[in-house]
Length: 284
Image (tube, rainbow, N blue to C red; front, side):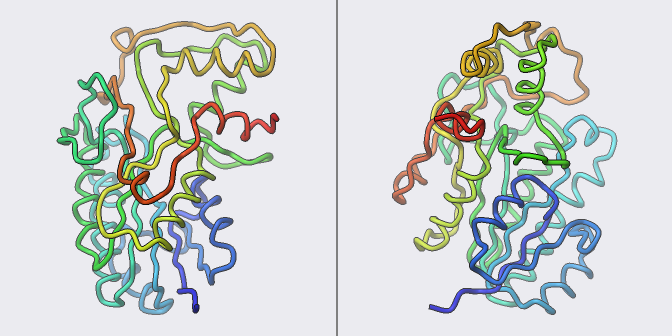
């Protein structure tokens, strides 16, 4: 079977790193922001016309949640209108579009994990821009909108953007005081597992729609830090805080665990977040 050419945007990010590795046997063109700013519709049209991909995997995003409150146009350009440009280009070429979204599209008032069809209610500029991006992505002839959250999986020597999990692990290892939320509930997503699930859905003929792609289970950041400390045999120095104690520019959903029934129905069961952490840390 002939494999399609793939365009991966946002190529300097952690998730894109694992996407590129997972699809290494395909003809992949990786574009970072210096070579393709998806906020520029003309640049998107030219790039897609030149590459003529059968598959576009969009890992580009404006992810600074607080900065989006002061820079809404930048957030919308990357997270919404840039996705619209990719969807329109995909439509011209009959290409499949994969777009990654977020748990922030929910309001966080739930008490059990959100399934894919749960009502959305974004509470910040960032969240609204991501929900718009979902809607625009689904205009492509075949589009998979994959919601992920709390991504981790930076490889050894990674010099790119580091997230909450990296900060927790670094702090626990060094013995520094680590601030952790006791009441924000998340379903961490291990980037290599997200990439594997992405390929499974694409090659398994999954139809257009929204899918949750997170590791099984959920946790607070306090519980997560305690778990990591137990794995490496140290007593963590934790500064326990609640969301009410934080002064943040943008609202965050408190309870944002995600369920993944559609992914499971397509024959892919994500490992638990605990299993993913062990693999990331190179533990048996």
